[in-house]
Length: 198
Image 1: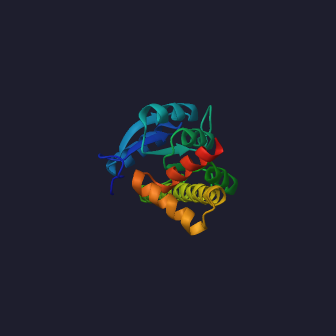
Image 2: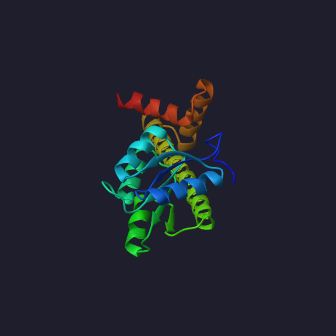
Image 3: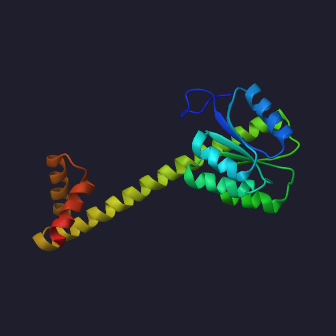
């Protein structure tokens, strides 16, 4: 089992399960597989607090827990610090699965489970989480590119209007200012817009 890039040691896992025997069994399975169980919670509220204090790489949460159910605990954990989450349940209800997915859970296991079920669920949750993280970065980059494009277009328009330049000449002037100043085209465009707007 390969470790995550973020953590130099074994993958650190938070377990939240109100039934002591299942929690101990889960801990044993995870440690045998080479993971580090960094925290154990007996209810959903404790899981949220331990996720905050122990900063796990992944969480395995039971759906039915006192104080706060596993799905609400997952939602709270993910709001503070997105990590892959695997949900455990004795119930294979579609409605629970839908709620878990909506909350941002990436893996699902129906009890009773075996080690052969647990490890693929963890791998799947980590892979889906990595895909989503890459997608989020791509969207941020795309949004940044679109924002830069808008600024550059606006700055070109202002130069064309105020200086009587053609579109090509306006762009050439922006590019030259960018090269001379060593600043990105977007920054030069925004500075020009601010100058004309003031």
